[in-house]
Image (cartoon, rainbow, N blue to C red; front, side, top):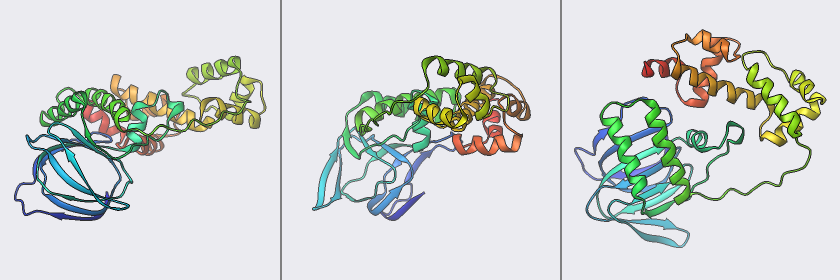
Length: 290
């Protein structure tokens, strides 16, 4: 979804190819640009656009003190972050390849662990010279044109690699929060994580985890969040959803069985939370994989 206005040139075939597959959090499209100008446009996705033309793309972007010219050479990229308003004028047309990535999906792919999921902050960047990123974007186009021949796992692996390179070229360094003392001891952390791993299908409570750590529930909840970066219930939910996704990819178990094996109250609750995090229902993912 976008907000703002778009002025298009007269074109009968703006989009040459478009990916019609239901890839969670990722969309690929290729074509010839027909946009002459945009005014205060805001997107809810991160956009990576690759100039496939032999000529450079020339554009003017509105800055605080007027319009500033930019040039995107052939086979280089232009990165436009989500939720970042832009007003621009394009002085030339081009053939392009665009990959849009949902910000939450990108954070999940490149975070070091489920307990360290943080928003990825990007800056608008022009003329990114990265043959690796271009190659990965073209690989996603091939997957789309072949109707996802190699499967969703390949798409996710390619998108993960693309995401790491995107952060390298257009990322804004996150401020490191000052960590207060008072987290779980190494012993308590190990005991609690071992219990969670062994009993993820059970109805684990704060009281049960706190008892394993030898702390009061209030003290434990505070110490767990300090150590893991998430409240216990958030950490459990993320871990259960990730395990459910792996079961969908590696087994032919029914959705109700997977919901039970990962500690969800029922299949409807499991489906609702799965779609909220992964952008697709577990049933839809299972059908694509099979």
